[in-house]
Amino acid sequence: MKSFVIIKTGSTLLPIRQRFGDFEDWMSEGCGLSGAPVIDAAGGEALPLPETLSGAIITGSPAMVTDRAGWMQSLAVWVREAVSEAVPLLGVCFGHQLLAQAMGGHVDYHPQGREIGTVAIELTEEGKRDPLLGHLPDRFTAHVTHAQSVMRLPASALHLAGNAYEAHQAFRVGECAWGVQFHPEFTAEIMHGYVAEHAAALHEHGRDVAALKAAIADTEAANALLKRFYGYCTER
Image 1 (spheres, rainbow, N blue to C red):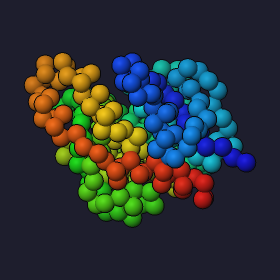
Image 2 (cartoon, helix red, strand yellow; image 1 turned 120 degrees about the vertical axis):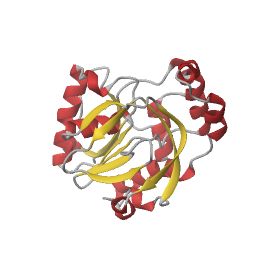
Image 3 (spheres, one colour; image 1 turned 90 degrees about the vertical axis):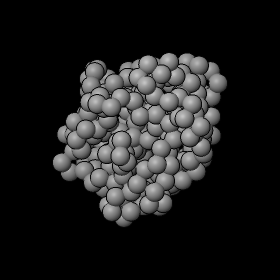
């Protein structure tokens, strides 16, 4: 029987982890699982053979894709193999960027700085027809926090969603490998924690932290994406 795994690429900020748990906890809960197997790629744990998997989620991370650390390069090779074998993948934030870079896209720091908070995102026409994201409303809200972005999609990618700040909020490569820049695993409470942790830096860059906090809200449609992805993997 094939396994569904979460590939961990780092941990959330310590104060948030102490209150709410870590990326893999939120991913498991969002999928409706009591605890999916976790592979710590950032910690050097061996990656499973793609053909043994029903699907995998690649988490967010405080690391930067452009650092091209050894474990990132190894994971990128694994991602290319998984895509070639049509293993369902969902890359989230860092995972989204790593998927893009592994498949020939370009990742760099966003020239306008960090996107953070609860934001509106719109599906493209391709997104409306997508088997995963097509179940979302044409316009939905989601939680985000990222300093780097996919500046250029892989040539083979389908552009699925974006907004005025972040053109590439979601894409798909191959039959079933998705990247989402937003965080479908975040709750409003977790998002409040991130804004609080980044408040000083946001103030320094002239951001209205009070307005960011006031705009944080539940994101039921985006949160449902994880359970839909897990269902896709198990039914496929």
